[in-house]
Image (cartoon, rainbow, N blue to C red; front, side):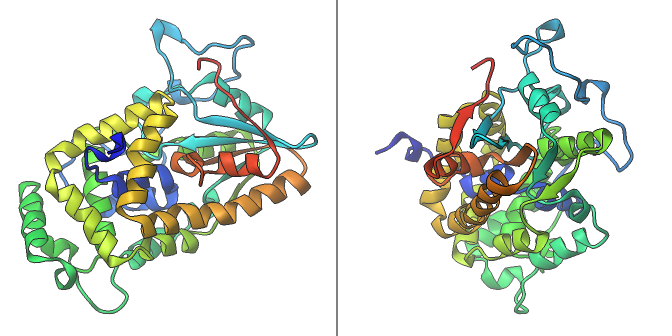
Length: 345
């Protein structure tokens, strides 16, 4: 048996931290507060980030060891070129801690050399007045059902016990689909451990782009992203929730392990912990949230390389770059020159 199948992971929901942009991850926490205990204060709109998170012009020489021996995360960064044009692909973790900053000088170089930045969602749509309402609407059942109508009795009992330990109840989530319940549990836990969507790589670079006056854009609309989430088969939503509830006490360790794999820039471990497990456990969800969106983005990126003027830094969830379905291999398959950018690798 392959090593990646020896230990069951709640891969589907954890993989969402590497496959969904700030639109879906960042709009859920308002509801999450009622699901899980939280000890880390969330950053509010208008808060200033610590000075160490600001992007500054990178040093002339490679190497990223900073003051006091701090080592930034190893970047999941590639440069794609066709001779006349180029773009950088950056694999993001959508929830980070203040201790993950500053980022690698390699990312700073790409940021300063890029004439524009492209995210999964354009910042103006992400911050639109109706964004959270649209997210919550997509999380509800569209056919009048409620959560208790689809939960097996054993699953319902496990969920009720977990929520009760956290000071909540299953009634608070009665309207919502299992994928949202699962995501809410993980985000509530992540928040309590100090992970914050406002510190995610994409959110951070959106702020830096605004400060630098760089143009920004998006690869898809919020409606497309929400349709991908809501389109997961109910059977796979329940399977992913069951995997989480089977060992909820292990979720903290697994989240930290995933975060460390991202910090280490460990492609093999990231693929094993997310893509391969998700492909095995929830293959249709994997196709909808990863492969189909990559198909659409590949066309956009190909067009950018062929026709746009000016280089771009493209920031997407790291899972979108991994393996044979990832944008890195697929752009290479189109004949582009693709090279990983990593001074400390």
